[in-house]
Image (cartoon, rainbow, N blue to C red; front, side):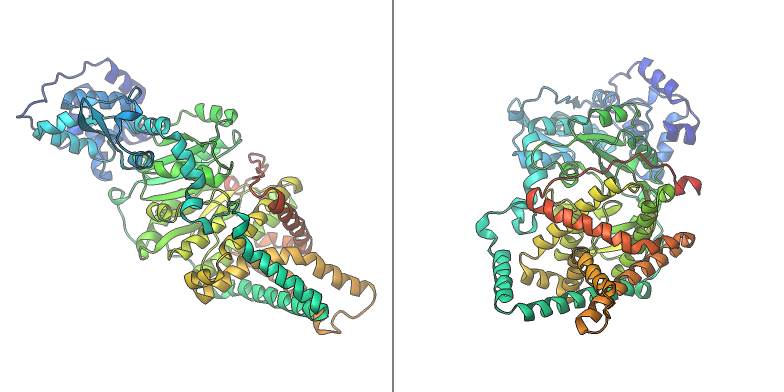
Length: 637
């Protein structure tokens, strides 16, 4: 409605009232000699009922967007989709199919094909012994239907029209179990070695064999094994530090909007947000999505909620969502995780591209355009672009400031350097923009991995796709207190361990998929981060113990390695954090990197807690509560 008020200056409430009170035009359009009266025959069915100037405005906007004038009016809230389609069906001599009483037996498709039908927007049905096709018009489909119906009587006989919502409801009602099965189990069934789902004990012999070999080595030569372990760990951490320090050297600023593209050339873009217990945050999310610089007629927003989350669903109901928005209830099959909820939305995604946002995300308005610019500027093997994440509530606490520095180092320094090196990128949890076809081709998300983003980035690379970064920013809310922070980091570390274990099931195949460079980068990024957090308290304790006893720390090779590794890791963290904050214009907050030693101790607590959860409760999803921020850099600026 705001769209229409801004672009046309009309009162949409009055327009709707006029439409509903005006008589439906007679069916004079139907007949063998019918020819469309205008270049926009999709409006002929309601043209006589439209206020003066409204039809012309909708046609001008439809022309500029290369879409149907019916989509303009429906998206603007002038007329409801059902109301329009009934008028269109009457005028064109095509039956309207409500589908609410259509039995499952009427559709000859299997459940899997039925799920795919909703993405295509067409459903075959058998009625009175004849095969008919139910179409949910989108884009310029209503215009094409009007033209075909005018020319071919057989089209009118064998075509039905319905709304996208009714078609989706039909599929959900009759193939709900298959939808849940696909969301929860598709990857495990199609690529079991790439899923974190539990596997039979007989298939777990490799890690058990490695553990047995290590235990045997320690038993036979404990001294040599200790030295070898110390040296290996230290070298791994030194390599990790070198990789982090490459960030400032390999970094290059992203170029934006290199490819000129008009609104008419813009594709449909799907936005998916899987939310749970986010009643306090969902209003801000919807406002941010409404503020995206993208034609609403070409925006397809899927908000996925859980069946028992009554508060969030009630909050959404109060927001008067326009036709861009579609609420999907996640199936109860399988684990209750964010990736499973995202998988539940994927069959219904209509966009050429799909982006993922969280409830607390506030993306910059032009982010979708920046992502499309990147996709159009690169070869088709570019399947994903990652926008930068930054913390919005930096001033809430020292922990939020540390989070800001950490994100600045990761998204503004480290990931751009990896993108410049063209190596696999572990994705951030949101603001990932995908080619929808590529996302479907690799099986979507792993519902059994609690850091589905990191896993997906590696899996894309293994399937031959590339990922890059864009300079557009999404503002997020960070936990400002220790308890929520610890629960969130526990889940992250647990998921990174899952990701490492899954992809290392077949190291030879992974080496072949990623190449030597990609394979080593994976070990350092995923494995190195986890190892560093696990071992940090041991290294720190040994160095502190020798110092407390008055013994020189650097009097031996092992002691020197400990000290260099410990101090080098802390200095690397501080340096990259300060560089990232400087690029964010937050250099005045760089003093927070002095808390790096305490931060690492907290990370160690989280990683050991994550390891314990991995062993006893691997799929537990500890929810991070949002809507608690007391400050906002975004609003202040």
